[in-house]
Image (cartoon, rainbow, N blue to C red; front, side, top):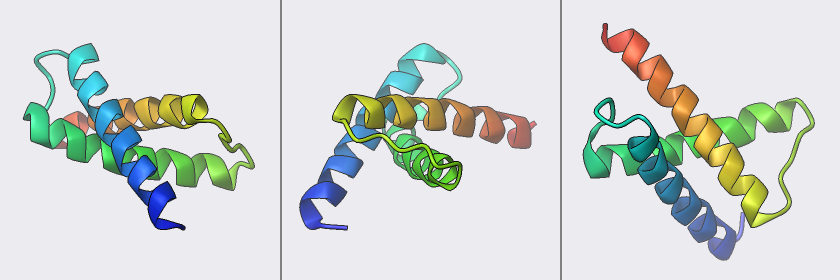
Length: 82
C-alpha cells in the first residue's frame, strides 16, 4: 500500500468514526475514540468485504465501507462491554 493510499485510508476511517459518533449519539467513545474505532472499522470492513470479492474503487465507496464497518464495530464493542 502506497503512503498516499494509506493516508487516504486513515482520513476516511477517521471521518467514518466521527460520523459513527454522530449517528450513535451518546453511545460512542468520545472524539478520539470514535476516530480510532472508525479506522479499525474501516480496516475490518475492507478486509471482510475483500474476502467476499467486493471492493470499493471510489472514495465514496470506501467511505461507505468505513462507516458500515465502524458502526458494526461499535455495535460489537457495545455488546462486549455489557
